[in-house]
Image (tube, rainbow, N blue to C red; front, side):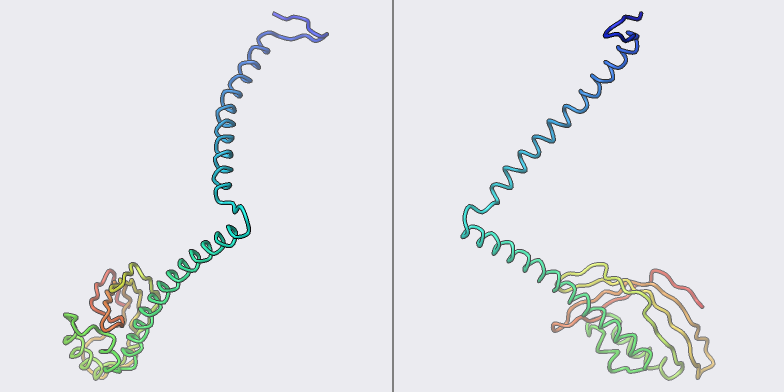
Length: 199
């Protein structure tokens, strides 16, 4: 059915469809608008409670924020410092392996590690038979607490020269190193191989 209104022809079917869409749009927009208004008024109330009423309040608020930020920065700095300390021990360990420095190598190992004696004996024998270049490819501190750190390490060991008839092959490995604190310093306590590949 078509009616004439304001000198225009309007199809009632089209008008009904448009009206239906308009009502749907309103029913969607209205709740969202109300929600936004409620949130903004709540945010204003929250912001007003934080707003200083005078210069003294402003100074206290700035001091509180400043102390909070300083504490957060100190915590982040302390964590980063511990991570760097663990990485430094790993770097020293691999350097000592390459340079065949048994004293430095054993200083990176926790004296109560179940592998302490084995590492000392086996590395002493290995140093006499083969030259190996040990390289750290990637260090990822997986977890860190006050006295324990777990680090995932990707490493390569490249045989440079062999003085023995035994077989010594180059390799790539990924493993988890566990570090414990000993007399305030990080020491390697355990090692677990996750991936190993002969080269």
